[in-house]
Length: 510
Ligand code: NAD
Image 1 (cartoon, helix red, strand yellow):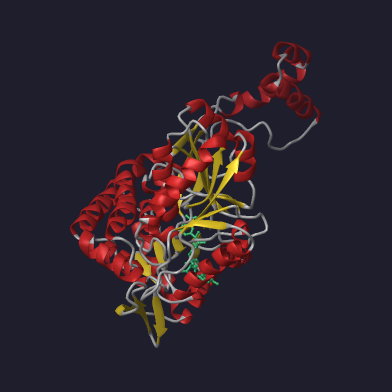
Image 2 (tube, rainbow, N blue to C red; image 1 turned 30 degrees about the vertical axis):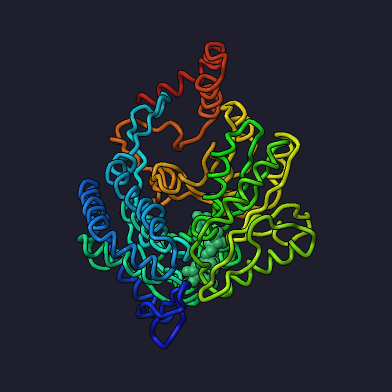
């Protein structure tokens, strides 16, 4: 976490509450200049051949590996997450993106030939080229302070864009490294810039002239504001917002695996994960052993802290509300005494539907577990609410996983696993409903960072039958031609309209 001081963001460890670093911050008035500089850099960078862009990404991957410990130090300093998570859930997605993009971006961004089987267009040569958008403004949260901004910058640069990144003011150290690493790997000066500051700096970025796209990752409330501001200027936007992922455990699931998966997906990063499991629906008689095992293992877990006092008291308020309304906590349920914003890994059962925790993102180390009668009830429960980021189905049956998975309203559906695909660059990432729209990662995410341009080549020798002059013959001929080209009774049409078609052919061949 960090606190604002004049001209800088001071970073405070949420575990020890000591100052562990600082970065210079800018005011909103300085953002426009960063965007203008990035735009100049992008104009020079855009013609770079794909192989050269790939070489930059490969150099970056080597650099990230060489400096992995230093990057992990920054992540751990400002979030106090377990060091293993800094590697597994921050460095891995970044490295995977670089490697996948270096191999695949050139062919995914290559011009696509558009073929014309239509008789009257057959002489044309057309293609769609994927042009960069210019400067991509990336506004990012604190929960994965390296993986999210770095991966977004890598995709944007691979597509030929420049990036101005606004990291979360609660975790600015990792964000600062993004600019530094790109520069050290030989990216053109100003191609990737970081605008450190609070909400007002993010707002200024969205309003800046020359911005080609906004990639916003964060809460729904801020996402709505950012989308409205981008909409006013008709700047395209991708929204990666919150989630309340459901995990469905069917009665034939492997209990040990389901409990292990639930434990990790609910509590890694102290539950501060957009696609963290917040609701578990267990079918029938598996409910009791599942809750018993999950609670026993949760009680033994040691987690990192929440990011701030504010987050911890918000999460504690949700738990207290649920308990007051009749829920029970077989594990956890309160803050950990002592220094730092630690909270007990918490399992809640018997949560009534009117409890506040049922209606919004918890974003903390708390998971609710409920029994469901069958598959249909599990799907109904999982699809309740407004979010649609991720969901998982736990069963030994591929058929059941397929059947249930198809009915779930989510951007990603996993089988016997959860959320892992964020770290695989070829898997599309994004949500539905209140979890946002647009995709990052994958071919879809890469193409979303480009503007498709249709480009036609015509040697200019073939006459164009639909140009002036218009006359009765032309009207009849087009009527006939429509039947010949697109109807199922082509011969019949050709015979009926033969006079007009011949007139058109004569004109066409003249
Ligand atoms: P947040 O919305 O508070 O802040 C996100 C970013 O927006 C920060 O950099 C912040 O400074 C900036 N910001 C704040 N006000 C702004 C404004 N008016 N204009 C422009 N920028 C502004 O979110 P957070 O607390 O940092 O992150 C947690 C949220 O992010 C959770 O809801 C989580 O689910 C979500 N998240 C989603 C994904 C995903 O992939 N869908 C990934 C990670 C986090």
